[in-house]
Image (cartoon, rainbow, N blue to C red):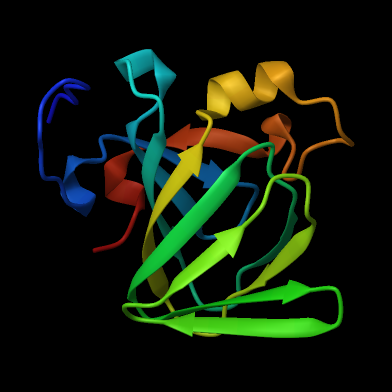
Length: 143
């Protein structure tokens, strides 16, 4: 699928052709669109296997809508779990920790785009670090 920023479109997880793996975890991000495609929003799917744990601190505001399984995060001492059809809001500059208790998938929307947010970020070091993220083949991301 080719993202067209001036057209109404539908897409699903299979339309994410560029997948990234976070560290050595079975944590994957499949991009639909970002600023390279002319979008003002970052659009992506995430797929995390049970047992994935890592800290995050985003340079953008993000909403994740769970489509399979459940998504659990730690925010300080608070544990927040969202299930299918529920959404999680993660504001820029707020630290959290993913604690994935079952295989899950979510559709994520963030603003601004990753590229713009990274260029303009003035806060502490972002998590995960860019060095921990690497491209993977779609064949490495489970069905």
